[in-house]
Length: 445
Ligand SMILES: Cc1ncc(COP(=O)(O)O)c(C=O)c1O
Image (tube, rainbow, N blue to C red; front, side, top):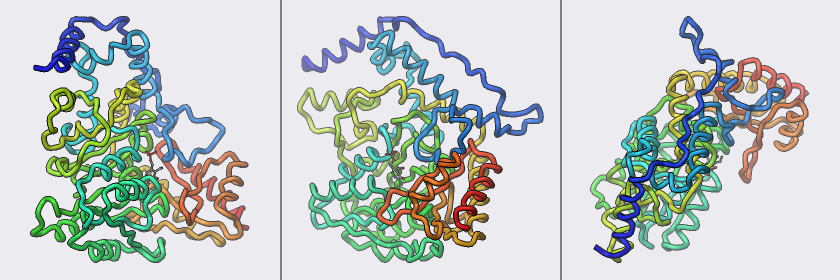
């Protein structure tokens, strides 16, 4: 055994002998119950969990989380552990003394995704997850990546930067001509036709923040599977999904969607701490990636550290090798299970139904309004929690500014063609949708 390896093991054994200094127990949240005596969910109690400014209507909460109370409590719990003893992190990572909180994060995410803990790499956000997938992808110069014209900056630039290193080609495919008239069969057909024998990866966005359109991922996955018939692993086309705006607002096990890799921040719809996310990959897809940033993930550290210490090749890639390392804001990472638990308490199906109902109400109202162009389809199969629209005579920025004057928070989509966006989340009430529709009607008058 080399010196470096021995030193690492020694420090782990030593760590296991230490108790953590200043153990701090979590404070119990003192919120009102989420369910009434009849078992009915109380959406006002759900709203009360969020410290959002009470005098504003928040219709952009999909952008970045406001930590709900149980999540804030969990962050505080881990922050106090770390603040009282920085070595706590090694004790927690490598011994049983603190209940293996890293494993608890992977278990919680695995349960929520319908996958397995070993299929999950930790990342700080969607952007890093996408970058790890594309930069890590084993791809040759004679191969290509096919993306769509509707993906986010973080997705397209992950592909472009990675392609500049590997020398592979990149193509962008339009999936529809007009967003409001998008059709699932046409979307699948266009992806299907775009795949050639040289296509090593297809990158798509589950719910586009450019248009609000929800893509038929299952149909796209079938098209990729058909294209892969007879291909060797090195030529296999992988389906990489930016899933951030579908994750935790659709009642779906994302590990069963048919993707090879699924990238998502957890700091949007899941309400997990800011600066958290993950890359999920099918067990047999991970060897198709290389790690990009040295990992500190406790699940893989013996192997990655050992390969470094012994100057050896890493074995076939596992998810844990791809979690980008360096120390990080562990009080945030380790608090992810509190967000999963909150979703479980409310019910993933209830959350999905509430978001579908609120956003459908917005789209139905907006579609009927003179002077408004609704770009997101009303078909629930093609839409989710984001609605994109234009108001005649106003730029998207003017729409958002005028609504902000009424204390209604909305956003513009950060794309070359930009729209105003409204998004209802579990913190919103139906009357807030009515009030934003009223104000938009007044803007268009
Ligand atoms: C479709 C899409 N992908 C990726 C991102 C970037 O997400 P993150 O902040 O988690 O990196 C965004 C931002 O909201 C987005 O809309």
